[in-house]
Image (cartoon, rainbow, N blue to C red; front, side, top):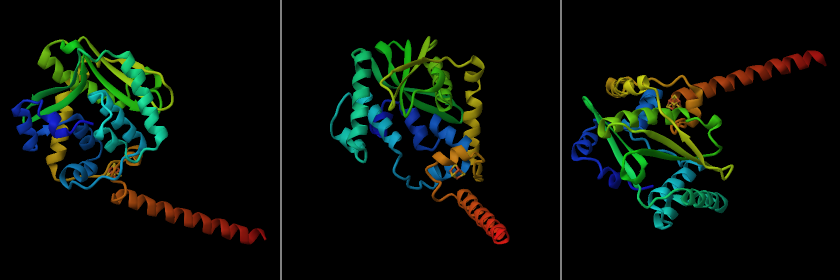
Length: 267
Ligand code: SF4
């Protein structure tokens, strides 16, 4: 993983200034605010320290690092800390396969994309730009298993919509947008072309501004989505999860009491 501040230097001063003033919005920020305002508050307002990332996230970071730097140096070792040798070898093996498939020589890596969305500025990084022509915009991903049905997952859909919304304003047409997905289960590379519908691309400013509105709102309700909670970095401190756990514990105690009562009569 390239250091975020170093990556940000490739953005124009106006974008960096917006980010510094709290007026920058990346797709991951927007998704967090829209998905659970409480998690957004923990991350971006309270700056709560995040727990150690899950194994697959670390593997993904390692793969990302290799793709962006093509090096196995100290940065690689720092990211790999905590992974066992088998996981590290899996990532290295997948990267070798990927590097054989891709010609990096003429490509630009970590290309900044941005667009004004008054009063905020959207910003992000496309992982690769083939031959520096803006003709092919790629994001590479690493997951536990292949993506089902060769289709982008939900988070990638948001990313594609917002990146294309920004990239088309910067460069005009972007004829091809692909995900390259490698996974821990098989050595296959999935090449997944994806072009969101124009109506979805046009809708990007609406959800970016909605995310900003939630951020500024001062009221941060918990999400209703238990799948999201399962993956959330803040479930250890979240009152909603605590409350649900207590309810479950009480329910189980009540069921056990009822079963014990029935058993006493069966004797
Ligand atoms: S655990 Fe769920 S409700 Fe709590 S902060 Fe995370 S996503 Fe929101």
